[in-house]
Image (spheres, rainbow, N blue to C red):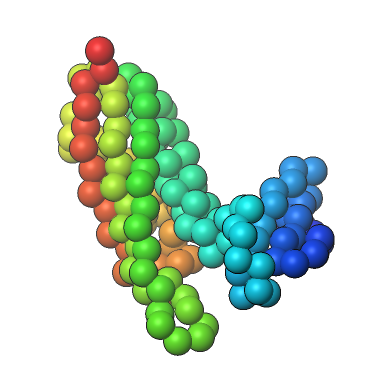
Length: 139
């Protein structure tokens, strides 16, 4: 895996992945208060949400469950002193489908957290990561 980060002025950077995708990044610490993009830490938090959401959908679909939607909302706290690592991350899932059993959704979330989600397992070294969920019936 590769990445390239290019400073484009002020607090603005362009992050490019080895697969050719590009994302803007912003750092207020460089004195540029007008935020035009997420910070690197916001991207890390979104990465955790993306990683675990992908796992949950994959596990449910692999089990042939009729999942229609999955929304993960994350809240995090950071240490007050440098390095300001994440100390707590909470993920709330809303999973929508037809005839989804809560125990099946809960197990998919558990498997992601304990076995498959590289991002959350890595960040769990510094942060207490918790999860909860709701199951909604699709219309």
